Image (cartoon, rainbow, N blue to C red; front, side, top):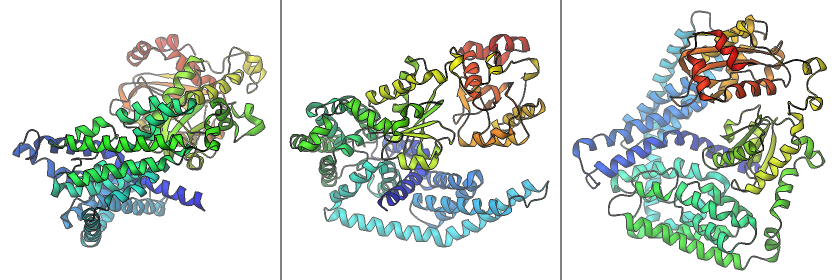
Amino acid sequence: MFQLIKFKMQSFSRFLSNIMMPNISIFIIWGIMSAFFMPLGWYPNKILAQLISPMIFYLLPILIGYTGGRLIGGERGGLVGSISTVGMIVSAKIPMLFGGMISGTLSGWIVKNFDVLIKDKIKNGFEMLVSNFSIAIIGIFLTIISFFFIGPFIEYISNSIRYLLTTIINCNLLPLVAIIVEPAKIFFLNNAINHGVFSPFGLQEILENKNSIFFLIESNPGPGLGILLACFFLGEGEFYKSAGGASIIHFLGGVHEVYFPYVLANPKFLLSLILGSMTNIFILVFFQGGLIGAVSPGSILSILAMTKKNFYCINIFSIFSSFFVSFLTSIILLKFINNKNKKFFNLSQKTINKKLLNYQHHDKSDYFFKNINTIVVACDAGMGSSAIGANILRKKITEKKLMHISISNSSIHCIPKNTDMVITHKNLTSRAKKYAPNSKHISLVNFLDNIFYDSLVNKLVKNKNFYNPTNISKINIFSEKDKAKKLFQLNEKNIFLNQFASNKEQAIKIVGKHLVEQGYVKTDYIDSMLAREKITSTWLGEHVALPHGTIEAKDNILKTGIIFCQFPNGVRFGENFDDIAYLVIGIAAKNNEHIMVVSQITNALDDPDIIMKLSKTKNIQDVLSYLNI
């Protein structure tokens, strides 16, 4: 029951975080402009100050409404979420950030269910008409509902909560909030607390006080830094010595997740966090400190950037005081750790890693590390600790020349379903299994644990003969006939130059059409390629995309084939505006032949100069000579 409740809480917090996180840059823009151009800012400017209010009252709520709607109902849900949020904005006198969350979520849910209801019931030729008018009708209905009912209700609730918080502050009880916040952070609810709860209240408060304490409660790096430095100077064993590097990443980089493993390994440190956080809040309340905007990540650099003139001393003093209290308390706790805990931490880190790497598969450990082609390191938001872990593992994989293994990082809910292996913190593994049930899962306790990654890489090296193309006799996934020849021979009929597509979906359809026409796949494979792209982009970087179908579509593949398409004008494949693919290479591979096929392609395209030449060439023979597949 406890695990189920924890999973539901983490899922809900992740959803709140996913609504707020894409818009954090706008929060930062608003905060910086406020710091510079407001009457009490560094460079007061009445003309430029006029730009600030519309951001908080209009831009941010509409963006939040769009994001919430898109998360549930796709682009259509996002559009309806945007317009329905306008109804709330007009009906209320406060920033409708919470209103945007509720309106966007409701809009996305309604649009999603409407689309399911009318699926396959629209006559050909009427799709666009139904699509546009359904958005208009649903949007009008929800905008009116938001204006008359939801907006006033949210305003009433927000004012009530604000009154409650004001009462708590006036009674000097706000420091007690740390008793809830700090344990919740350790269970990876930090993003939801900061961006889903404190940021909306902070933005509402800042309109009156020009400063808000709520921006500096969860984001304060002081308590975590105290624990990390105490572990580094007084802790015994390799586990604690890694805290030195973690403290730099935590304090300057703002990745707070790096200190969570130390607290989870020794829960007594929760007392240090709570006391440190209470100290921070008490000082901020007493001296009326705080920030002018949300910070992300929670780095000391971000905090200083969001500190209003004349408040640097107060904020720095509060952070340093919370660090000192946490550090001192952690030292005392380390000195009085019982023998059982001390024995645990004095264990060889190699032994700990061995247990972590074998606890799910016991006597099948060798088989567990075979057939590994893709590894995803995942965390809650997919940006902080997982990116660091993926970078460390990627370097170690490269050093061991296991080039066929792809390493990436992701948020829990975006783990590709066809990932071979998923690495997460042990408290997030249960959630990861829900999103990648067919993957092999490994837990860790520290994303900076080099010994863990060394142990994992050694396991992969031990079993690399399964993938080694130079040792064909040991590869059992190919027939004797396959061993005598290449899997696939590229020729002129597979190459299509000077293609044009307005978006990546159209480009994938072009590639898929050629795969079908040349007898490599069935028509349904094109739909699986589009479905695969929705799971995660097949954008490789360096202006190359490698679209292919999902695992479920393997029965639609008739034989291994490749289609090379050149798009001289480029097609946006990645999330960023400059993630432009000039080369789109469609793949269809029987069984596990994609391992060899993808390896051949990536090896041929490892030179950026070759990629640029192929993106401009008008000669098919150039493609054949460079790829040589």
